Amino acid sequence: MNPINFAQKPVLTGKKVLLRPFKAEDSERMLNILAELDVQRLTGSVHTDEEAQKPRTPEQEQKVREWYASRNAQTDRLDLAIVDAASGKVIGEAVFNEYEEYSGNASFRILIGSDGQGKGLGTEAIELFLRHGFETLGLHRVWLEVYSFNPRAERVYIKSGFILEGVKREDFRYNGEYIDTKVYGMLRSDYEAISLSSIPL
Ligand SMILES: CC(C)(COP(=O)(O)OP(=O)(O)OC[C@H]1O[C@@H](n2cnc3c(N)ncnc32)[C@H](O)[C@@H]1OP(=O)(O)O)[C@@H](O)C(=O)NCCC(=O)NCCS
Image (tube, rainbow, N blue to C red):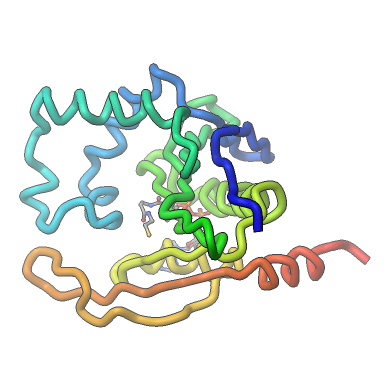
């Protein structure tokens, strides 16, 4: 298996969303999205509401800007901005990371800020991103983790064809309560079976 080079950052166009490489100016928008309590809670970035509500220091904000400014130079991961096609506004991001060259497996994560949620944008973004991952990059398996207190994300993953592979019991602690982490995965063969079944006869 040839190693995947993630250097090429594509533009993936759907009906409701566009996925594209980050631009320098997107970092201000991402700073706002990443400041949302629910986004921090559901992505495991913090362990308490109090931590989520703490204002960021200028140094922390600078780190976030540098992070987004450096995404296009990464050759072992893919970070794309998700843009709402109707408004042209960045609403979040989709990422393949933790790529393992020998197996061809990678982790997937997605986050969308509150103003983009619940409109079908996440579902379409996942479809476009998976298509790129399996058909263009040639990934073998895509896996993700979701907390049991995030039924919306879980619903979207199941709807997209991810299969529950296991539960890491009491893996995460939030506001003093233990939370299970569910591991979902999709093999290329799973993806191909879904793609075949969705071809109109
Ligand atoms: C998870 C996320 C990517 C989903 O994207 P989205 O655009 O909001 O989702 P969609 O509108 O495409 O679909 C939402 C689905 O969840 C369902 N849903 C919403 N709230 C739900 C709930 N509490 N329980 C179960 N299903 C729920 C909706 O009915 C819809 O399913 P349907 O199309 O079958 O009706 C997005 O909400 C998000 O990023 N949230 C914040 C961060 C996060 O949770 N990231 C994932 C970490 S693992």
